[in-house]
Length: 105
Image (cartoon, rainbow, N blue to C red; front, top):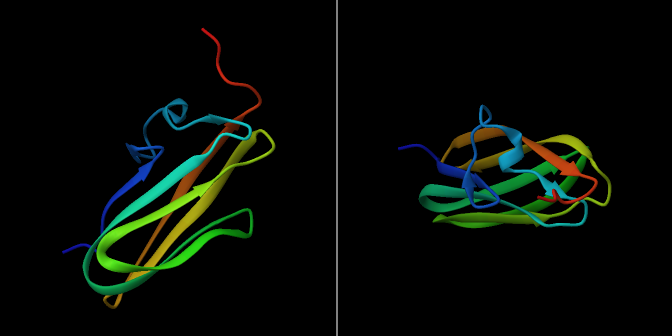
């Protein structure tokens, strides 16, 4: 059984091959990263981007790591989701795109 069952960004299953437009947010709008965990006991979950820890917590398993954050400037960043529990380690890079303005149309 895998430690991480599902990773979601902005309530959509995260897929690095999907068009990044699906996950994009304008400046100041909240991103929501979630990881659904399998197993028993607890796991340490962390999301780090640009050298800053945006979220870090202990999660009871089975359970969900929920991380909410936003950026004040536009750009593309890559963050790393790391989870350690049940003797396993999971790591995945997550692309975070922030636009200057919300799309109109």
